[in-house]
Length: 315
Length: 315
Image 1 (tube, rainbow over the protein chains, first blue to last red):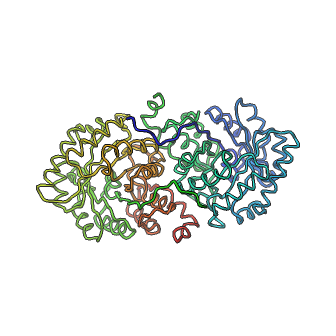
Image 2: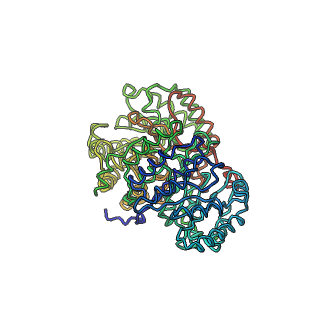
């Protein structure tokens, strides 16, 4: 079958964000020991980029109060790239002090979402990027500052988010000192066409700086959107084991695209991720044990791998 | 945002196959009155291609014993294209007698699956296509003969199905008198790359004859595979309302890609389907009432449409 493949080549990195995005809306605090077991299990399954928590005030989010401890544990894993979310300069300083390799600073493209979540306009949030960058440089740190554009594909509060607003925000974030950019479909509004077009538009003004995409599977388009971003040149995807990280106000709606589903689609296509699917399935079982009342999402774990999978892998 | 879109244009047709593929594995016979209500609801929601049943011996599949009655009812719907599945010449004769616009004759690309399901090799199945074609022509009928290549992306019994075998089978089916071809991922093994490559390979030997793709969402790749086929030029997709049609031996695994999910992804991208999403959601509710113990699948019905959807539609 000497048919030329229209499929791009190149390996893909999955960044496990379950310890942050997955847990942040779960009220019952997961014991640090369980989080460490999850972290080590994720590493053993081949995950090499892991977002371990968020430097937010513990009073605001008790679930993530042990972030510094998780950063330390993750830094001990050879070859792991350890990231944390930071909502402001104070969080940024904690990230610098922690030694994390990267900090994700979210800036919402939706003015309404930005005001509701951070009590800042997008422009004010971007100003904080400059403050963080100044502190980072003054400290002589090499911690990567990744600005994550939230609600990049629409917003439950504001509705439509114009792609032009996202492009302008990306430009402003880079001018303010962001090293890299990621695009997040925070509320599950993206579709493959929107992904394809927005990635292309952002790449035009920030070539090589858009390093990751973050999709939710809320409306069943998670994997399709990953594929659209993959075709548009993105090679790093956020995902949560078990597809957790859904919105508590949308019962039945799944959360982040599941780590194991992204690993599966890539493996099916022969795209390297370095991930061990069986290990991910086993870890998912463990996770269900740690989060007993939490529904798990994603498809491949329930259905099982195709009989043809090993054959393909060996080929 | 004058970014050129890499997205193809053109409307898409969704063929509702729930009355056949969805029901065929459900043992409790659905009353004909309920099926007629489903048929009329599907039509009212904008579906214009509907597979209403299968001409198999009623003793073998009592669920579909009322197929002739459903064909008659569907033929009364203006503009509807009515199709039925036929497993052999006898079924083909019934289809001709029924006045259906099209008959779908499945030929499995997996030798093992073909023998297990039809007790025929793929070559023997193709021979039956010639018999059906001869009868069709002798009857002066214009009933379209669509050969559906089952297990085109792999088989739970045999494992790997070589794309070359699918291409050869398509050529043989056309030589035997098939009018059109569809490709079916009967067991949910397809991935976007395989879809893209197989559609391209088949198109090369049968340009313009591959008119539909049939995907299951068993492993969560249903919509991603639809998208891959869409990019490869396919403009008609089989789907089942509520994502029914799963394998009874794979608990938790979803079935056919859900009609409402395909309608949603296309509407999100501004691709015309003629479908009314709210009407599909209401019909799904009714379907759940008719099939009380049957799990429903798909994502968009549970999550609800994005707030931005109407805006987009109006744009």
